Image (cartoon, rainbow over all chains, first blue to last red):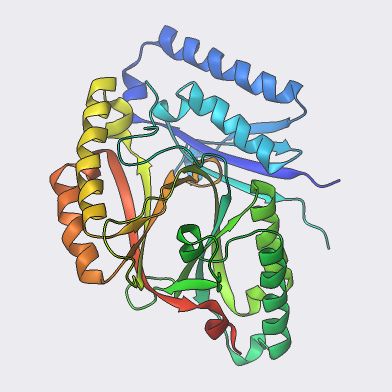
Length: 99
Length: 239
């Protein structure tokens, strides 16, 4: 069965560092709910990895979605909750390779 | 208020969700060893025919003239940019666009070009320039991201900037520049948006860009602009 891999690099924008911890936690909980919703809808969150030691970004998060449209909708939900206003990012999408 | 402006006085969202671009920035990689052949060229041409029959638009021109001939076309950009050509097709869906890049690669595209592919659903409708429908052989691809300044700004500051940018966009239309609206790339790239112009010359593009600078378009939008001359793709596919 064909799946898509969705790769999401992220790092906090400068103004994220000006927020107090409670506000940061509240925002993160919001976005975690969106992740949980996508998982309930059939996506698989493979994990989040710390890459700041060897990359421009802080973390890379990797997901499997059944279709690229589902990956798009996941991002629409996150940006609907202003995730992209607090985090800079680079994203990518790919199909499972077939030989 | 959303980070991203919706419809403005210049751009409408009538065509939202109609079409998804497959953008390609491509470099010539032909050398003797990679053997790009007539068979590859024919297979690629075959895939383009399939796209056409599946309802794709094979050029920026076709976005403005959907009932026209739709000859596959790209912009020759190598004279002033790191890639030799920039092309934009519009597929019916996101899946079709992504699968389209795979089909082209399987047909031998990789033996002709090294390519960066970007995929973006349409958000805003095309807007035609004001004036006679002249030939506009030059294209501008404008990629941008809403930068840290935009994301830290208040809703009022964003609204003011959007309104000011519309002044520059109206000036573009008054200069008889066609604009493709806006496509959304951020879900699968670091660029956020793409809009493409058809214009009569590089010097016209340069001239109107001063107005975008004047209204502080680039305060909130960090941009990459690429210009190129429209070229039939079939010419560039010849071995």
